[in-house]
Image (tube, rainbow, N blue to C red; front, top):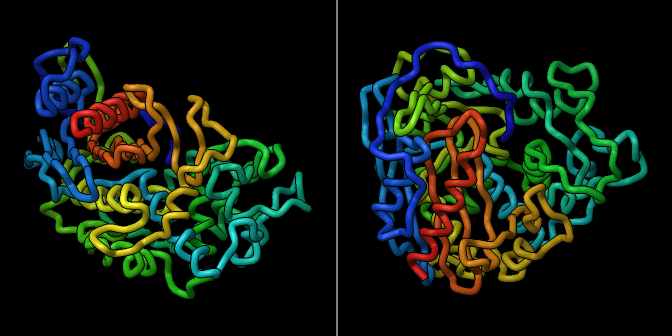
Amino acid sequence: MTLLRACVVGIVVSFSVATAAAPAVPESPDSYIAHAMAFEGIPGLQAVAVKNGKVAWAKSYGDAVLEQPGPRRAMQNDSVLTTASLSKILVTFAVLQQMEQGKLKLDDDIGDSVPFRVRNPKWPEVPITWRMLLTHTSSIDETDSQRALETTFYGRDPPMTMDDYLRGTFTPGSRYYWSKIYRAGKPGTERIYSDTAFVLLAMALQHIVQEPFDQYIQHAILDPLKMTHTGVWLKQIDPSKVAVGYTNFKDGPGHYRFAPNRVYWAHGTSGGKAIDHFLTCPDYPAGCYHSTAMDFARLLVVLTGRGSADGVRILAPSSVELMMTPTGFRNRLGWEQGTNLFGLFDTRARQVWGHDGEDYDVTNSFFFNPKTGVGAVIFTNSQDPDWTQVYAVDDLDFHLMSWFE
């Protein structure tokens, strides 16, 4: 998800690191990861490598909670973080499952499955389809940053439903209506990354399956894959497992200050318990699931296993292939756009697929090589004000893959 950068108000925490030199040739996962964390100012990190249909290695580093809000606590494999845009992988799995069952076609009009009109007013005769939404080509943009901030809640679950949020976003005169929600281009002709598109997919899916989106995800994906630390609501989280997200500020070589999530984004206080700094949002399918790198590694097993994990079929092989099929569109970095997944080249110039996420003071990376069957997922509890930490975390993810190939 993407929000306008906020000013820091309140206390920031000093945290010294040993070195700020550019990373050298990796000697081992431990040394390289520790160096990258120090160089980028990452308080805590979870890393998992998948190979041959199973988790090959997993380890956590650093701290889940710093002195603010405290007490300081080490990052563990079961520490819970926000997934950011990796949540969109769950949406994609769910839509493709229903496609496989014949309940929808990707070129159907999404407006047939939601209770309000979804048409770009500049192109009123052009249907906006499931495929367009999945490939970020729907012409639907984001709501403005202030509306996004108003629908982020700390230490409590959202007082509004996903349906209420979306109705408000698309209905003129409503509180959360955004008159610029549609771009000028014809739907299906340009790529514009859109969180709102994936929330719309989740709402439409509810109409197809006749149950709340989070409940469908629970029994169709999370339970079969034993993803026991993944969910939406705060009541699902053990407070002792919460990892606090931080914005990092570099004061000089080897020295960082950290502002807790609620301080940087919501101008709140740095006190309270860790759970008070953990966020929820009504548009959770786009980026507000919570999970662990170990749990999300189960999705890597599905993708590298052509749709199955430990004998449990989640997707058909053809659906996995569709996620990795280039659409002809590329993102601003030149990466291929698949059906949700991005295709890019790793540190050895080989095609890999996956997704990353950076927002609300977490930076995550999830990529795999379909030819070698090796993938890696990294969760961190930090973000820099320039929004560039994601490139370093992606690079670290690619290195982790290379060590296990």
